[in-house]
Image (tube, rainbow, N blue to C red; front, side, top):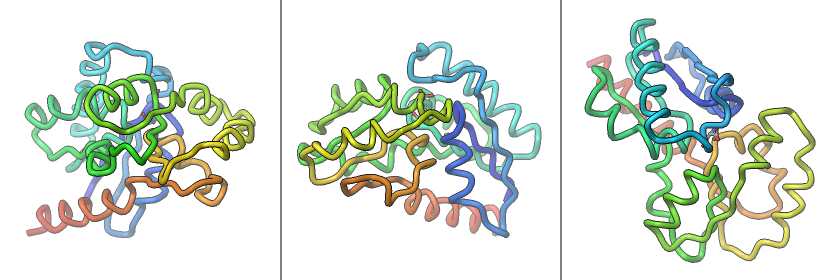
Length: 192
Ligand code: DGL
């Protein structure tokens, strides 16, 4: 299956590395000119996501993966009804985990959406995300997490997947296992 992947930068690459398989061909769109997505309006990102997805479909994509939590929150519903191929948005996988004993770290858009709709605690990860994108030292941000009192840290930005899971000083959750399951299902449907 040909899978089109969209993110504002390093998160897309991190997701692509984790879902890479012999069965699929990946087309990875790292929209670095628009980084960060976290400070853009819904209107801007909806248009952008539609434009990029349409481009990927023209290139042969049979499945679009919004490998970005921010874009998933703002554009998934619209794309689901307006594209001619299936779409996966990574944020939805977190929904059962957005509880008061967990903490979500992500872009401003991601954390304000989560805070308005769920009892989860949130941390603004804007500077940490930028440090990853611009290849700056991230030790300061990892150190700060040591003091966090939470059962689980939800990595609500795919950029955080660019860092090895063992570098996080507390237990974390990311959406890759759930994403892999859904890709497997999409592959089965497309080959049947
Ligand atoms: N990888 C994006 C996400 O998962 C980065 C956010 C941004 O570009 O601000 O939300």
